[in-house]
Length: 422
Ligand code: ATP
Ligand code: MG
Image (tube, rainbow, N blue to C red; front, side):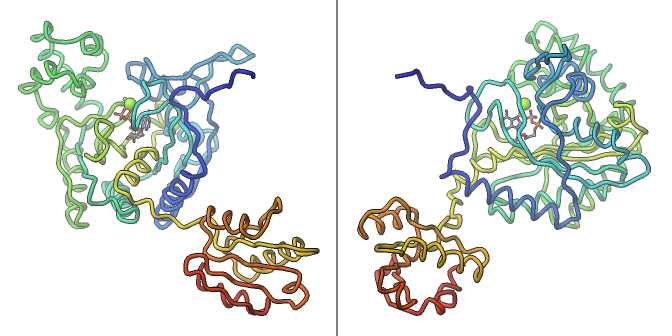
């Protein structure tokens, strides 16, 4: 026998048993974002490599170690998108969506990062991202956070996530803070690990993110970003906090929260759960007012977030919120001359009469016992039985597969009988 071929490590199939929960999460997300008037945008999965190195920053985990980069047949360096913001901004600029306009956009789809696969961390994973362009006030930042809070409520996970918030100020304010932070790190250079040493001059804020306890220890008395914030950013942040208070959204201000990608300024936030272990961030976002200009567009304020759908699905599984609608309502069982086509016609007429009903026809023959077994296996509520007599008399036997009762009714009454199961 030929050797079987396996999927790439960290890239998973979504199997038929899993897809109902995925669809529930995806549909809830779509429903929530459209409730705020946001529009979908779909970008290619592959972009020019330098889009990501320019947007995300050369000295970030994503660009340094996680990108799937390859040369195509023309010799261009291309990369499977590791996130959606860069492509969204590229598309907005290229298609003239951003200049002097407001855009409220969302997208959903696969992203690729070459990380060590583990629970909640994969090499192909899925994000839903939301990006708003052309609005610079804290009101839109608050709306994005309220939108995510609504989503958690609709998914039933609101009790299991908490919000962390910070402002990382303007680019200038960060430059001042950077020098102060570098000076502090230089005093403790012997404690820093290789990663931190390498980042210290290029991207010292990332050192704050370090998971190394020794590095964390020397950060205790490091200068605080909050002391370097510019007046406008302080005001912006105060405005955001006020709006969140008014909306009844709880948060903690985490001075250490800087987020992994270079393009953020002012507001940064993360929604974190304790129910997934180490991979606890389900959603992260913030403002990136400089990115559009950095990618060649006219200066345009922007803010957005991205959430990891695998982590949301995992959370729902962990919390046993997996009760999704069965995939089959009625299963058509037939036996005898001419009954198969009659069964398919009956199913079609039900689909006409009751949009949304899920009817499955039995194929492949077999006696009633075998057919009822199949009906049970797919989780149908009713079996609809057609023998030669029923076909001749335009009736159908409706069998309740849970209760076991059955009755013969006219086919014209069937839709009314099944109406309440959808
Ligand atoms: P982490 O700190 O967990 O690596 P990140 O800061 O790299 O996350 P972002 O780039 O902000 O993540 O992406 C937004 C969200 O996408 C994350 O909060 C997470 O839910 C999800 N995500 C990121 N990387 C992965 C991955 N490799 N597998 C699954 N989900 C991921
Ligand atoms: Mg990461």
